Image (cartoon, rainbow, N blue to C red):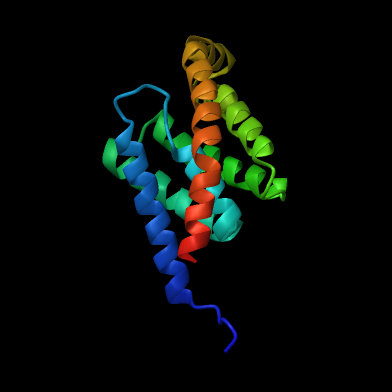
Length: 165
């Protein structure tokens, strides 16, 4: 019997991805700019596709706003994480782990710059530049930690999802 698309299955997968993202966020909350959200979103995009993963990323952003309150950094999640999902969906080389590692590292290094868009709109160029410059050390940690977590986790997580499927 051919596999049919099920909206219920889609909802369950999106909910499960969102729950895993939230658990991953809380897991490493105590370590500044070290996270597994990047590698998880990349793995989810490769395995489940852009549409479902985009839904999970937006739900994750919404839950973060509910949990932490609406602020500059929580609002940025509504566009920063979807950018990662979109870029990941363009790679189209499931077996090329290096492409995902490079993407994850670049994303971490550029995270602060991407987040300054809200500050740029609300406070202007000087505030956005100051905010971004102050965060460069954190972006360096973010980029290098993304490289390490993606090197260590991308392939095993993808294989685990493929086995489950």
